[in-house]
Length: 375
Ligand code: CO8
Image (cartoon, rainbow, N blue to C red):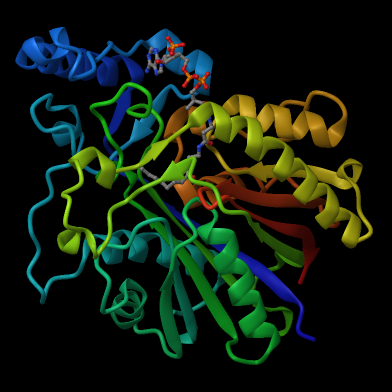
């Protein structure tokens, strides 16, 4: 069976970013406005008063200091609180296609591959701009790639689920050079009006090139020792936006069609699930946490990552053992663990082993165990 290699990664992140202070300032203005407009209903206890957000809470609860977004002005405008994106005509490229091209081209350049050599392309992310034609097929066309392409969505775990699908396709002879791209425009479906979640997300797009060892052109790469996926149904992270909204006899509130979660429950339930998942995956490969040089974990919450690493290692992780990018990028959904890998793998030695792991809505967990190899 073909040995799969991660031969290149790429990253697109918006130039514009928002600090916690800027985000909180906009939230406070919006909450005050809401409370004024709804004073009578709040007084009658028909509507809940909106409490102001705080920078101190955000840093303490999440470790997030900053996030990059596709349109800062729209997100921070208290009367809008979402990106302002010009409508594109059908003959123009979609936004997800445009940002994907940047990340994919970087990943291919790092792998020493031409776009025309790609024969499988998966757009793996938590929201697609339209149901069809698939964003993946649009990117395939814009890139000049061959083969086949499709979209898939497993929320924050989309990239690792896509990597497993790509590895399976190569191993089964259905593809030779696969790309998994995760264009996450989270600011389009985050609720910036509510303090509980307004600080959580940021936008980014990552790309991962996977190919058989025989075709690799680089001097080094990361051999995929194994992939493992798991899902368990939970309503604790949910978004009710969908194509049947317009058919529902009771209209949903706008907030119901955006991201929402019971964050504390997610924290409590997902951390042990992830630690056990990684431990069992490593054991199945004849490895243990002590063999890991690096953990590229999903970037939702600093406390979650520290707890998962501590559970696995039986001690606090050393600086750099579980790299953090959420301080700068916030939760970029499925792109997060790939950004951590993209930015923190160059220093590893041949033979070093690491695990890339995502987790989130579903619930879903995906792990990819990687070993640096000379080609
Ligand atoms: N400022 C001040 N106070 C606040 C704020 C704020 N911004 N937000 C909440 N509070 C208050 C609460 O109201 C609460 O007050 P009280 O005790 O009076 O009720 C108090 O602070 C404590 O609130 P929490 O219990 O919610 O605080 P936590 O310590 O649990 O921290 C976190 C909240 C940071 C959300 C934390 O629970 C967490 O990170 N949990 C894990 C969440 C997670 O990993 N989720 C994964 C989501 S991503 C995913 O799966 C992909 C989805 C698809 C992408 C969607 C893109 C939009």
